[in-house]
Image (tube, rainbow, N blue to C red; front, side, top):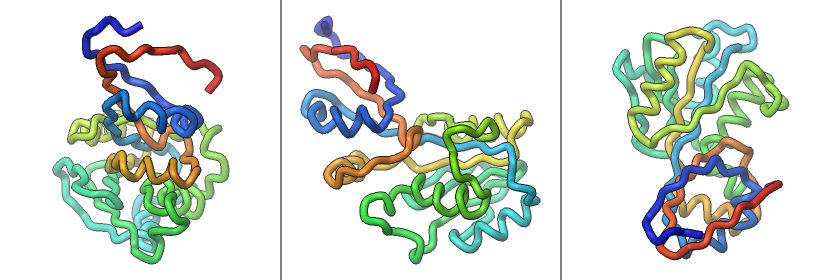
Length: 200
């Protein structure tokens, strides 16, 4: 039972929870959606320059130099392959389809980068990928850089947090995102009873 104070809980929410319960809870909680970022150990035999070349099929690639690069809007991805940052902006011909999912950067990234460039068919059972939730700020990019520079990963991708409105649109369409596409922080309002939900 809630103790009468405003509390903040952090939940790594999977999509079955969201699609089943979130639509009924939004009147009782404040929702903040954060980025979920991706680190990759293996470029499928490609060099960094070859990988950047293949990215240019799907994205406009802009060199941002050595300074930390944080995204300013959706459809931009921050890329860090050591030393320099790059901005990836999805080309219009690859954006928007299918309806709903085609507006999510993580979905577009999965279809273009993971499946077509890196030949990943099952992202859920790979030990050479790591998903880390961000803070919706430059700190997310600092964390990616730190993990890449310390070794163990070849390249890192930072995503712009999706809006609550976009998330609600997905729910309205009864669609699903893959796990670790989004990170949600819920601020419970006074008087809300919390029930533990298992097996979701």
